[in-house]
Length: 67
Image 1 (cartoon, one colour):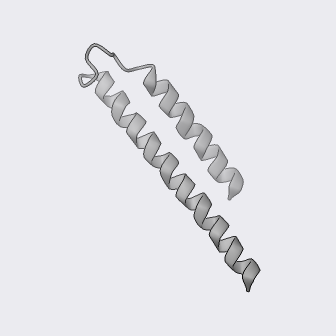
Image 2: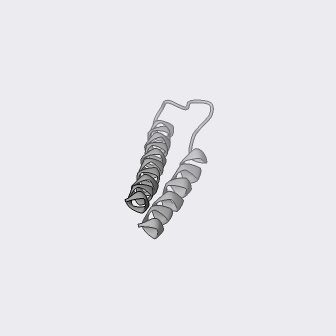
Image 3: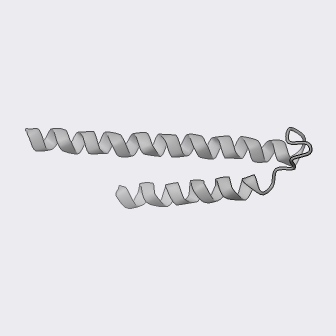
């Protein structure tokens, strides 16, 4: 599971970086720039969900150690 979340995190960061280069700063909410912004937001959401998953697995492991 650790490798899986690491791979997905790398993919999400790469997606964010790529789409950040696609934004037209003169018209950020038109055409392809709008799509790039939405994809950046989706990548950030994916990063947040992966961090929540990672933290929940750590909590689960700590609870198993206590029992």
